[in-house]
Image 1 (cartoon, protein in one colour):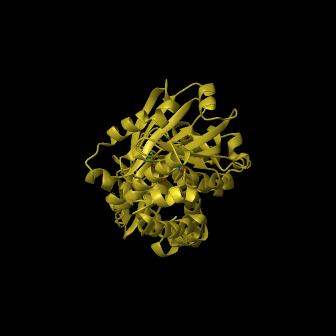
Image 2: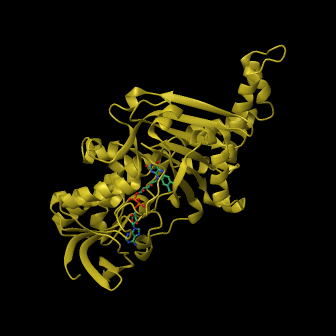
Image 3: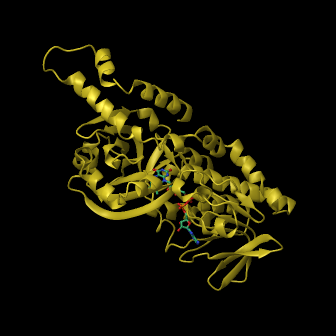
Length: 421
Ligand SMILES: Cc1cc2nc3c(=O)[nH]c(=O)nc-3n(C[C@H](O)[C@H](O)[C@H](O)COP(=O)(O)OP(=O)(O)OC[C@H]3O[C@@H](n4cnc5c(N)ncnc54)[C@H](O)[C@@H]3O)c2cc1C
């Protein structure tokens, strides 16, 4: 291919498609390159997308996008060794306007990339970008096999293990700060899903599991309800996994056999198994001469233990990258200095604001007591409260009794938690 494009976007995930859609609508000549057979073919994700960012870009997208269920039920299960305690939060208002949807990436990514193509972008799939073209210390295109394609600017939206950011010489991530996500898609009849999760037709649930399921490794389990399947998996910190010498497939097997989980997936058929890394800290550099980095490639994910948000951050950063390119094109200046406007936009929007608000969360969430002491404590306390086998104590006295020996530690962790999450 010898044609020159205004912009080349590498990766047709949510970040790439958001950038391609926005730029094509602005009238730019955009090429989006995806290494998978089709967008979404190689993508892994827990399964829930917060709607806000996409709704800003494509208002009421849910009327046309292949969404699975709108999430109206949020559950948190704390797992002790022999007991579990579940908080069940049902809120119709979470569905109107929709706060989040479950999605399957194979379908969703194809639809989103299709919107970019409809807007005028060119998409080529099954092509892996291998390198960047440099001219006078500025990136001016990409190399894919024997093809060299030129552009004014390249947007690296190539996911967590961003080859292009490395090739551009941007500072590397610390791999030990990565989490590993392992996920299965388990098929079940629609009615069974609705009965098991107490859902009205079309509504969905998100259930998080903390405690015994990760064998003390910082992280947690999740189940998201799709129309006729469940997205089931765990996310754990890689450094602890290595330290404890535990195999990731062992963890998912044990998660699936935990009584609290087994009852929900019983009779289901595993359709898909996948694993992928999740960057927990962001890159300190998100742009250089001729290139911008969006989505996971820039580590733009926020995990505060309650919400794991990567897709909405990827979409918002893709849109900001497009805005920065527009300004650079108006000034005909694609230097690092000119493209630094991208960071300004991310700071103005929720992307870098939320990264800043929750910057202490990754470190706090690596505290092993959150996955051992506290879930066990809650289960044991409730065991004391509900068991009738003789004279009973008041609830507060049971609390004091159960927390004996750990109160100072608990207080300190609570204060750290309040500052981090
Ligand atoms: C197990 C798990 C659970 C998760 N759960 C959630 C969740 O519930 N909600 C949420 O919001 N986020 C979740 N995330 C995070 C979310 O998946 C990511 O934040 C999101 O996918 C980032 O989008 P992206 O476009 O930046 O990158 P990606 O989705 O990774 O897309 C990158 C694209 O680039 C392509 N590519 C890569 N290299 C090249 C190359 N050299 N040439 C051409 N193409 C290339 C890839 O094939 C891919 O299509 C989860 C992640 C994991 C692993």
